[in-house]
Image (cartoon, rainbow, N blue to C red):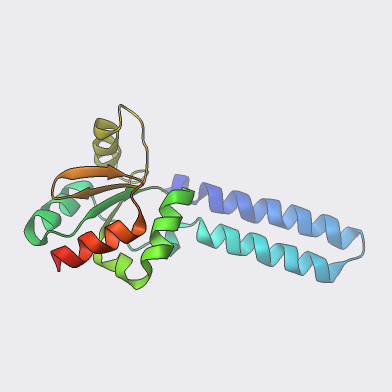
Length: 145
């Protein structure tokens, strides 16, 4: 559980250290701006930005029933964040599986990526697609609706 928050906590700690250093040099206004930037980066890399993850088995079962894509992701992945932000509100219609929380999800990703945990891996109708274009994912989502 703690592993998914590690990157966010690291950004917060680094931001606090940098801000403290800037305050010590006599620039509290700059320190506030720096700290806010680090808090924003930490938030974007946290699990809070993504829809609630579900177990891989449940995602596959639901996808088989309604045809919506399954997205395997992990916190701190810039490509996952890009996909999530470019999908906007439609991202909540997908089934998201955090591979750091779900060993079965990580195994599914490794099985289709030559043993690598390459994310985002989007599975549509049983076919995996590694780091697909967000516009293509939106199109697949429209087809399943």
